[in-house]
Length: 94
Image (cartoon, rainbow, N blue to C red; front, side):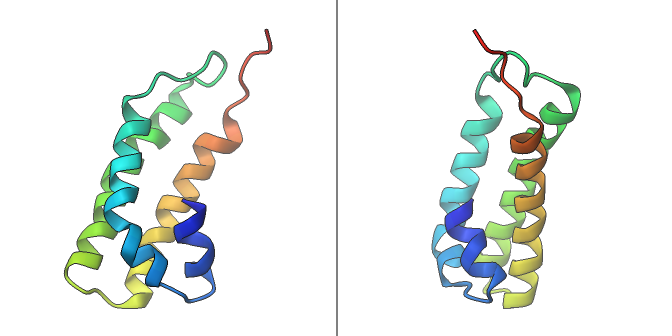
């Protein structure tokens, strides 16, 4: 996510365009993974579930050579959703 978003937020969309299919693959892996204890909340589950269609939307824009602004906006949506999961995950300490 960072490798695609951080350049994109500075209007460098080449990495995001190159990584669009990888972003979808990673979102699908994340969605199939088992959350650590303390991260298995409804809000995190919903965010992780949204990552797949949101990532697919980015990939579809890239596939049809969408405008940079549209790709950047779609990628920001994925980034923000990812942060819902990342920022709210507080794994239980053993």
